[in-house]
Image (tube, rainbow, N blue to C red):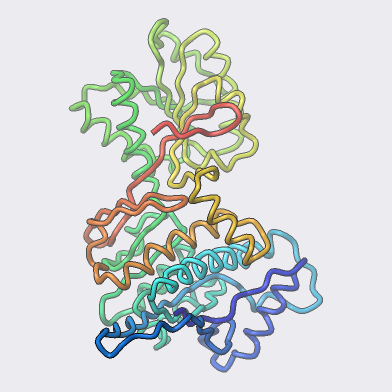
Length: 414
């Protein structure tokens, strides 16, 4: 049985947000805490099997409480106001994740598990997240999911103390080192592990002794380059040559004498700057007409609509990704069917993330293995969970998928 705030109905336009806003307003009895969607707990009715006196009746499983902290930002919603996709993006994200998470708990509840799910609005503000850390309902819960954004999570974790319990960072790939909490669980693989996985893939599949690194000159690229170089040095005992060059105006001429006319030339581009990428990749594409080029890019490229898939395909471009959903699989089709029946809309990325995390952590609460995440592997609809434990950083999912641009899109190659 799951006991939770009522499910949010999906309606046309922004009307569902106004309903949520009304529910929040009616519950706003505390200036520090805004639990979402107050309602009588829903109890699933199931058929009762008659048993004889000789048959033992299993005691009900204990109720596990979960605090879900999401940035609904309901204080910013006003009846009659006009909203656009940007102003509602955090609320949409929160709703989708909640629906997927709740659906997973309902699935587990059908197997006899019991949950109490409480929903809180962090408002997308570190100050609000900090105040929520004092809330006794959150402190006394068995599991905390959220806050979502790194600054909110940092402010929240700094205040929370008491008995050790898992605090799950549900969506952000930000480095857990900035949170500095041994109870933290980072589900979205941080950039460091994408870079290391790319280095391993290059060495396993190309065994090259020369790698060209094209840089824009922005310091944020070091978050990718430093672990990439460290991994390459470790794998090759520092025998691989890393040829780094800051490229201006797409000029690649200085690299020509070092290119191989016959073998594959491996390029790594850690940049996310649009003007740099548009010019540099165009020049690299021209170069690929005369030389064999294989390109490895930043995982964020999958979100950049300005990058031309055909050009990336011509350069045999690879990127890493934490998630990869095979929507044609029987499991994914079953999820899509049930989700659309319940919510009358197709699930997006956040709904699927919520479902995966609901299944994994909901089951974890009843197994008593919350301290053994590094010994458990879980394959969800989107992600594979392979956690490692690091002092001061908690548990970190290290799994990434290697994808390659192939018509008509990205295909998994590892």
